[in-house]
Length: 451
Image (tube, rainbow, N blue to C red; front, side, top):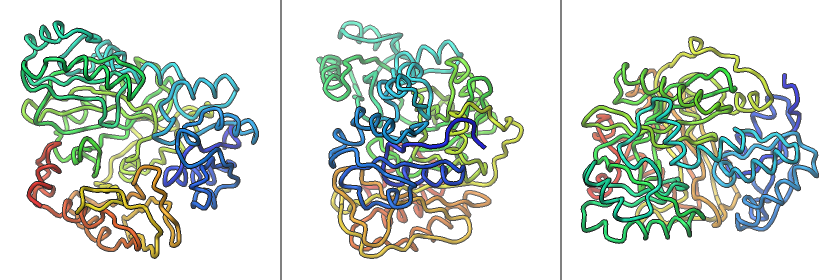
């Protein structure tokens, strides 16, 4: 039973909008989906208690239109707004607008979103919380001379990163001193255009790494973690496959990395669901903090499958002012889970997006299989948004069983009328390299080069 939240505006689309609709229904909350003209006939709109059009197809005129979304929330008199992921989910200005109008933003405060969204500020918080960070600059770098001094201290290759970057954008690898010529100013210009913030900083570029993240829940006082996820299988810094637990971490490393995530949350006074992201050096066996995502992640079902905890419901309860009902000792990691992102793309033609009408749809099923998708037969995938159309999540008693179940589920999944990445994912998951568990973030690129 919730105290104050009786209705929620869902400021998102696709599978995450549907995911939140279902959580709201189970909590007895009225769900109102905000949609663009392109999504008028989508499944979230059909299944929500109410819906409201907030603009035309382009996301800057609908899903990222702060005024339209706040106006819709006020018109329907909702108690809260759930931003999902992407779009305005980590936009401090939107969170602040909700706060100013007395609307509960389901996530941390605008102040915390702003602080942790600034990678330089987040790095400072991590250092103060005794969370390991990658060797690099103490703050912003605006001049090439300072960059050269840092390079002398930590060595090449370097990584120039936009402070406001994210999703694999706003980064440039500098392999040597010659490549550093003009690089700082160029990345600053790119960051200004892409993110409206030219600030950049420098880190040592690690070449043999895994991408590890820790799922946390915090009510502002108590904080718990739901274990780590391994998101190393990426293409162009975009995650393709996520699994939990990581096949690489030792129990000692797992304990240390999860405890460091809790320290970070406590240091910043975090309140909501969130994810603390790290790189893990396969050579030195060290981990380093890189950023915190102050929202629910695409891959959150992986953690749900191995813990039995509904992260969206917990996120809503925390926003309602409730304390976390679980202690760390209550949380048990059971088995292994893998998630494959299903995209409407053609892997044989450079993964180009393939929007279009779904002529048939058969989702995977069976024991230990979960399909999170907003697809249905007759639905037309619009060309205006991200090409992800669903996620297949499989649980097994161990990693081998989870892999075998995923292979079966990928083969079983049918999406007629458009090209999808299901076949490619089947090849990737079924490869000896993936089964070994011994790979790094270059794994997918290497796999594609030999395909």
